[in-house]
Length: 232
Image (cartoon, rainbow, N blue to C red):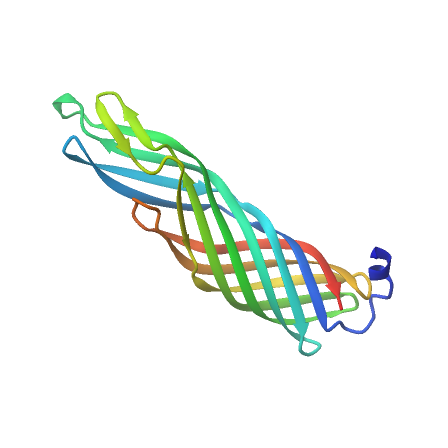
């Protein structure tokens, strides 16, 4: 089958359809925080959870339809997963004589899974087997956050302080945004090629974990992807 795909010259007639299959990297760090106020010993206790999630890996699949030699429409679906730890900070009831008391703890295994559907207008051109492009369009996001942590804070002399459930805090949102980027493809044969692109996408999402204040998160960000192209 691979031999059949590679058969033919790179200078063959421009394809009408192209299937894009890429490995994707969501660059940069995703950070957010949320707070909760609890009553402990008849006093308000402020609990703040801050998360910093690392760059994530995933995939991007697309189908591109050529309208003219330089204009195309592309529909694609991407999914990346970010993981990382968080920090919990609580201002506890004071010690005797009014001395302040705080608690800091690590919240492990935070995760945000970001799925996105992109519909783009693609403008391209090139020479020989190399083709560059610029693109932009609408992006529909779906964010699923799983924020894991302990069920209680245990401090000597203070009743247990609940901060969540015993397993996970789950929340999601599906905002609509936009994207724009640059691409470069190299056609190896009539039916096979390689390509890469840089895309920046953005939307404002609101995550609402149970028991905590809503979290404003910037969905999308900078993504880099590279993979194969199959031409029809």
